[in-house]
Image (tube, rainbow, N blue to C red; front, side, top):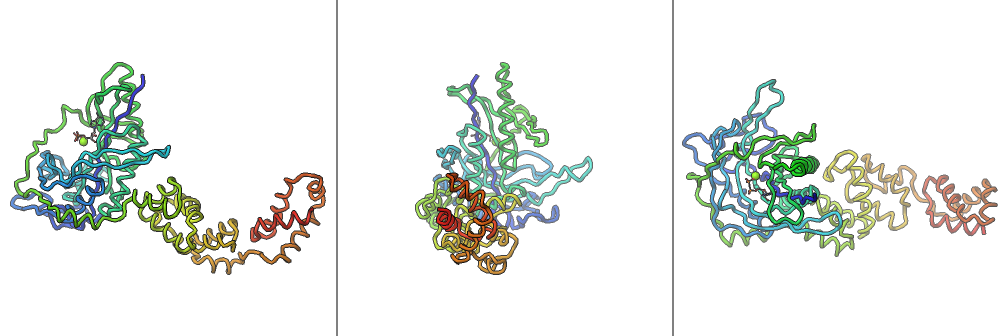
Length: 477
Ligand code: ADP
Ligand code: MG
């Protein structure tokens, strides 16, 4: 049987406001447990929440960047349930009237095609506290610092057809919220996390299958793995004539399996109702227009500009613009290199990306300054250093030596351009290899490479291979 995979994601992006969504308590990460939750965050009797306007601004920016209508009037509702990390007994969220309506975003697939994914809605809500199960030997610790932290929940349409598409979508939203500077995107700290809804249906069927919801996964790799094992699990059930039950499941990465957490029957009845302590949120056109003007260049716009301005391939431009810092770094390299956009992308997406990857570092932590890398690229393109020497220079820069010109000076990496010196060197090599000379002159043209190689070895790569090629050919004629 052929199954079609259907996936919809609910992404929670923590908004990078300084204070909570309804109180003045700090949102800074890493404080001592229970030092940053105030009476409002804990819902003590008699307190009144006051909406943080910065959180609204951020939600509006998001809506505008995915071409979604901004609601002129939206309503905060109480979602009622009790949980140890939600001692006040309800979470303030938005239900029927979210601040951001239907939008969409384009994702790039591996074959270079792009696909539009629908966004159902995005709404503002507060986060709950955190239950800490480790370090307490059979007990659970509760840290309420996170209570009241602003979240934007971004709900997608069930438009994705594979784990790969789901990851591409998640990465695109991740990149977008960072471009907008509304979320730091830090997945380890839980600032960006996702629930994945997965179902299967027969190829060609209209009706969606029954879905399972995989809760709170906070790494791209785990989301992909969790979705794929869930697809296998559901396919096995359906193949053997069984039925998938609608439920919430948890992914265990150590076992690479999903486990049932609660079924639909056990699901909470949240008894949503408008929060009587909060006025409806009204947003006027002037505010929306003003926010439009503050929007930065967005990933897709930047990608198109990179393709036009720097003559890059779609592939290179997509990689560079997937991350705002990386895009800015690249532009600095190009500037410092004397507009060598293609050679710059080779070094940024090649050598530099590989080195950062190896050390698990972000572009912002690069030990090589963009201007230094750019100057080095300029030297290569001007023929001042060979690609081989550039690799050596790169190593020194990576180890913190900075300025490529100073490195070349200090380590004697100046290229040998003096033709008398090169000629002498070639003569020596020819004299030392009579057998190869005979073979070459007997018709084995391939041996030219051998002579060039010898010369490169002697000069430690400091000679121009093209120049050597010519010289050796002439001498051996
Ligand atoms: P809930 O809030 O109870 O999880 P929603 O209707 O808001 O329910 O749906 C949440 C997510 O589930 C959305 O992203 C939606 O696209 C996705 N979804 C809904 N039905 C299916 C399905 N049959 N298969 C896969 N995803 C689905
Ligand atoms: Mg859900």
